[in-house]
Length: 629
Image (spheres, rainbow, N blue to C red):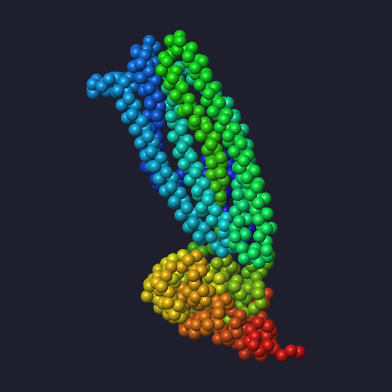
């Protein structure tokens, strides 16, 4: 499916949460998968050549035993002229060349064929697996790169877990599919070679055996229809188990505080019991199918003995040829059994392919200018919002006709009740969402005429909720940004007073951080966030509740740092703390997405409006509460 982003088009993100069951075969998906295989085409061709050669050897091995050893050596020259595919001549040549006994030469010939067959199969499997893994590596890279460039509006509506499933589980599902295809190739090539040999030896006996194929096919079809429903239920129960487990483990503190252990355990037990029930149903089906196929092998063997034995008595076929047919039974039936086994893998993999291509075809993105305006090496940092109106949903505006100009180097604080649009203003400034043309300007240039990557390079944002990556402290400051050296990162850390705790760590800046930086305190992680932004030396600094979750001591360090890093930079500060706001040159007050007041702290207090009320309710010193009425 293809997803476009035409203007005003409403995208249905719910399809990412839908349970896609897929189709048993979809040649369009297989064709697209081959696009990743094509760069490795030479190795794939070599793998096919190897499997053809190995399959030929696998078929010739029983020919050596039956036509050479049984008919030619044990029984002597057969009165019936049947094809031996040159094996008797090859054995005679080996006997004459080496002086060995015919039985010795046959054993050596059989041993050499066996070693060559297994070695060739081994190299086929290794080369085929290499092709598959290389193709899926490239696919996973392309998928990750594609999802990395989806806008914030996408991740606002799609669960990250669903995206992760596509990059991990679904790609693994395609690995199973492609390896299954390789397995089927390895089974069906000997099948067709054996079938050709069987027709060459005895057409009637071969036709008798071919009667079994429709029976196999019909039984396999109905069996897979049944298992398809069971396995779909199993996948759903496993998904419910995982969801239940994730919710309970991630919220374990709440579970224990609420004494919900027994309740949650009972809920998990019910889902677990249903999963067990369906798994047992699948085992019943699989074992029943296996027993049927085994019986069909025995029936096929009985047909060979009945029809072939009679022909051998009448000397229209040799005894070795009858035995050869019994040797070919496995090659004859095993591909059908493997096809039945691979059906569910193929079915699940098609669902995985559909989910992967659904993600790859999802082209929702920020509209970038065709010819972006280039910015100078250093910009002044003037910002202007002109009648900016915006809503995450078209029928629900968050910002309403916001207009304000921020002069270069000015410090503007933005305050307002929860939901007034403060953070939205910052997200639009960082070009995380599309907004109307000619509503936000940077140095008098329409922000939508500047490429988003260039905008973000000039704007440094420190948020309350920021992410720490795995790696060292230095890695988390540099973040792979070009032009930021170790020296510049250390200088930034010193500037924001983060060096005081970094140098006390065992390995200093090379100290490795655990998941989400849990071996650091909240205040230390916040200082790292400041250092990370300052290391890139942005002309515009944005603080979005950057000091809301830290202790007083750390806040004092940050306030000292802010006094230094704001110099010469345009700064926008979203905060609730009076000390941070009072340091601003002006204060913008938002309410219900609209500008209510704009001025200095003293001016707004004197005005006695929204800011005065917020100041009384939220910013007052708690040690000096207002007088009681």
